[in-house]
Amino acid sequence: QLQLQESGPGLVKPSETLSLTCTVSGGSISSSSYYWGWIRQPPGKGLEWIGSIYYSGSTYYNPSLKSRVTISVDTSKNQFSLKLSSVTSADTAMYYCARQRSAGKGAFDLWGQGTMVTVSS
Amino acid sequence: QSALTQPASVSGSPGQSITISCTGTSSDVGGYNYVAWYQQYPGKAPKLMIYDVSKRPSGVSNRFSGSKSGNTASLTISGLQAEDEADYYCSSYTSSSTYVFGTGTKVTVL
Image 1 (cartoon, rainbow over the protein chains, first blue to last red):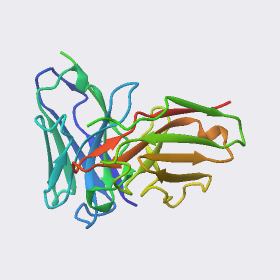
Image 2: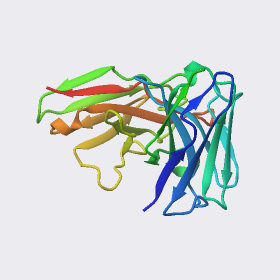
Image 3: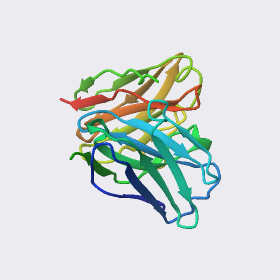
Image 4: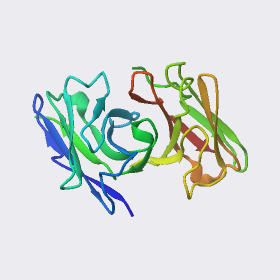
């Protein structure tokens, strides 16, 4: 049974870079038709799509975050990662990784449990 | 990109049916059959309830159904139960090759 697990620091200082990794277990990240994405949710607010990646490395990002976001994939480790630079308190959120159907156009059908990241000095 | 518009809250009594709307544009909801709905309990990760407008993942109750008309998608919960009390989000692929979520709806079972 496929599972996703986020990992990374829970506290990041303002202006620094947030780095998270999602480890996929119980299946291969190199499966065709699926993309892999990052979604975040500030406390008490709604979901925001950050970006998605295919195992080949093809990416697409939320235009509002594109200048600060890099998503990468390591197929040898069955992982994909998120880097968000120049963070501010507005980036404080629960960060989820998820599998995306239909070549990156479809729904997120499997989610990690999420990891809370707080931006504070 | 702007979030899809959902009502902030919807409520109903046990056994009743409720419908949550999700309004976008011809560049997202109206242009593609990639609308999805998610259920989220407090402190938990979202769970996919409906994908591709009206398809249910294995294991999701048939009390949940989805539809679309023009630029508005809808999620209907029939036979409302106490366990349906949660937040619900819609989402859609867009013509900019991006993905957008709705503003979210809190469902209350009276």
